[in-house]
Length: 638
Image (cartoon, rainbow, N blue to C red; front, side, top):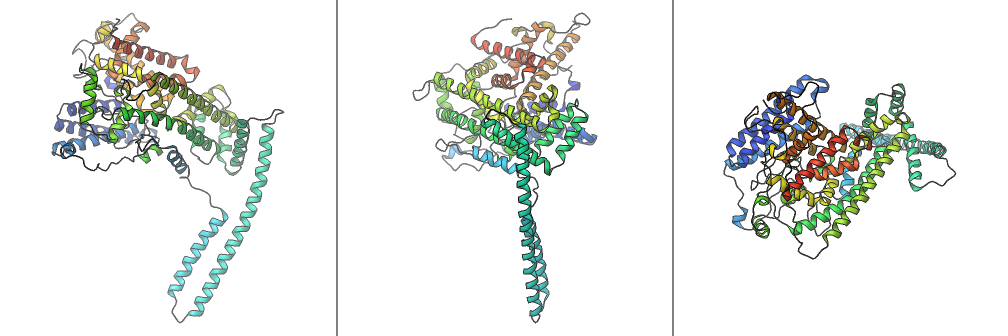
């Protein structure tokens, strides 16, 4: 019997299992078998998606569908690499000496520090992409633009008629030319008069709406700059609502069904789909402001680290963090990375993470001199863009010794913490401004439950392009803890559940009721790993809650299989049993970046969630992380 009831496992989890099996073959230097398994994974994903599409309706595309497609894309990329090995196509640049770098699909973005490569787009490009996305919608033509189009059509008709005339019909040609000029001039004069009238009416309306906004914000106390900006934005919202009907329709729906929270989600999603509305425009402006603050900090720290270490192990994932090559394996480029311009428009800017249970690095488990190991890696590796890409996602491989030049690490860490604190404060202020403006625009949202739902949808849109650089800063601040956790995971990877304190009746013995090659609570490990695919704090927290629920389901299944079910009406595990099991799941997850993820979630999750089930699950995970981290120091408490 599979752990956690594999009969009800999601297709995404099954696909990840198949891909993990292919990786094991790939890392075991068995490219032919790995190639076949990659193709099986692709076939399974295709069949699962076909079955979902055949259902029709809302079930045709589920939240897991984009992840399944991404996984299939990466499996296809790995299959191509396997065929290259089978065909004896191997890079031999190190044997031939220096040669021109191969053309990469990645768009290389240079930072300001001496042309060093940065995995994040410069703020000006980030802003241009946001503007380009906003301008992708249809725009209403002005009277002069309409007149210009009409004149183009008239000129095309004129040229077609002139082409049919004989050379002897010069009089007709002159008449047609004069007629064309007269019509084109009339169109322009009429359009100019219409535009002047329209501008005058727009100005009158703007002044009238500005007066309405002033009455809404009337006060004897002078307004602060923020309040003045909010008043201007409110006036812009009133002006927008004069030209569009949909805000009035949504207000009527909210008034009719004030307790329907699905209407709140639908309204915010609909609102953010109109980039010309003042609220999405403010959202884009605030995102750019936060990104502009994050970019120089993250890029500078990355540049400092890249000068200290040029070679890294081939041990990390593709851009979406689903597949991991083995230590010393081939370099595999992701099919769609955060360096690609299009990936930012699709809000797919994600750090690379490891979901595999393969070792993070063989170097961490050896007893050789760190200086000798580093020198050997520096000699064997070229300073490539892929190395830099992997380096950002693996703080456990960052140099922990003294830097080449005299520096003050404690002062620098304190400086990073202060900068992080300031950025977090700006993020909270930005979210508050967006929420207050949404409540001004739609008064029907001004209830406790509607506010929470509205804020959740705003956060989802706000964090999508920002979570990757924000998490990079968190990981830099918590680098020491991540390194300690990574080493604990490496050293105690194969520790059985009993040695970490899990009760004997809460896990199957070797070969008892488990699929060959699996391990206890593997389904919970996979569920926890899905946290890396999300870029919104609320959705990440939901992944943690689901992982703990799967742990409880697995424990109940193991108890049933061993006929050791507790008394009727009681739970299979209690609070004392949960922490050891969760620590085991953390140990098997091979995700040291969970330290930074949890720190960020604790900061950005709403207080209301922290006192319920979500808060309990987050606190439990943080306790498990601290316990596994302590194993690095030789502490083992059953």
